[in-house]
Image 1: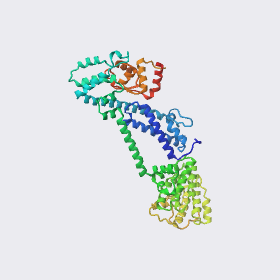
Image 2: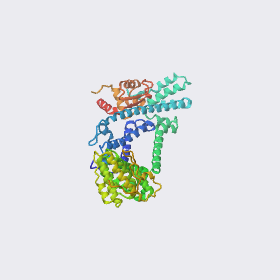
Image 3: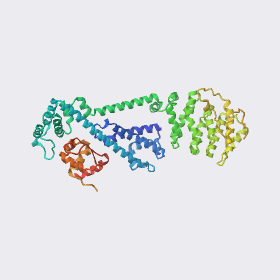
Length: 471
Length: 83
């Protein structure tokens, strides 16, 4: 959806979850709100959560399969509100890839099973209420008399019943039936009265029982005023709020998102918030994503620049390393798209500094072994750019020309590759030796180039600080 | 082609289309006697109406009756044919 505003992915997913939640509530209500205590059953909440999670998963899936982009506002709204249509028939510009739409049927079957379970529980809850009332009333002659009186009052007069509409036994028929039951058979009497009462008052029986003090206000609230559903809803909402609050303190991502919503951007003074593990993982995901939009890439690059600007401290260096190590490691993969390699290479060159080099260059050296010759060339050129930017005097002009002259080819032998990796490693060791790496907190093995094995079985990284021999 | 149902069965569908209810409420709204309701429920297929409870005149009032959400449109079309 090219005409849609491009928003950060956390907004999109938040929109999908919130709108999806509203749609889920309406869907559950339209299907199950008939049940008086619908929201008091675990199964109903299960259904609600499933309906809320479904659009979020679908949104991720459609983005993953490049049907939409997860930074598109319109796509987020469409998926959140119309996910059922997407599954069943597809909507213009959004249709499920392949046979994935057939997943809707098992989901519907599961919904039908849940629906059945809720109906069973509803029936069990009603039966439980009648049993409670049965025990209470049949054990107390006064209450039983009261029920008889109330029932008689609510029975329609025999002559006033419209033909065919009536189910109530007239008072005289009830009296005859009661007379046939011995007074001590109170349970039997209760059951007869109960059927007659329920037939006479099929809808408002709860309120009448409460008004006539046959049930306690608490039982009335519990059974007829959705007391249990209210308690469970309140409890779950409180639990949800507590989890959100806890996650705000425990993980900085929610507070980071709130800062973005309130202030629009996170200033450098909020670096602590921006460098939290969850925020780093979010941007790592965005940086590694192959189908991210240009604007999303721009936002991610801005974040990397923010992180790069704090690499003068140990914490900053560690955070930057945590962010970029997997992103650079992706360049080693054979099938990494050249566009992504170019993006990362450009980013590394644009934020270059000797400190950042200690994190980036060892990993780039490892990625020189990639099977993709084009990407090997790109990495090689990035190394040249970094060398010229940060260590211009570390190579003689002749050496620079020789490095620049290496054009990796598809049929390049591993031995030849090993020689070039060795030269780059030797250069890096000597260049790094002149740097001040006093950050004791940073794991030393991460800032050192790892020994790489050549086909000859010898470590390629030279530990000699001497300048490399010309290739 | 629509299946043929009795007038009582269609009245039950009409009531359940508004709200799932127990047997007493359905009998009252549809103007049916217990044995009529039992007959109507036995006639209605399980893909239309879910019955939780016993289908005997003495107990049908306590049964819980639900029109299945997937069958709502079909039930509506059947009820419209009654009107």
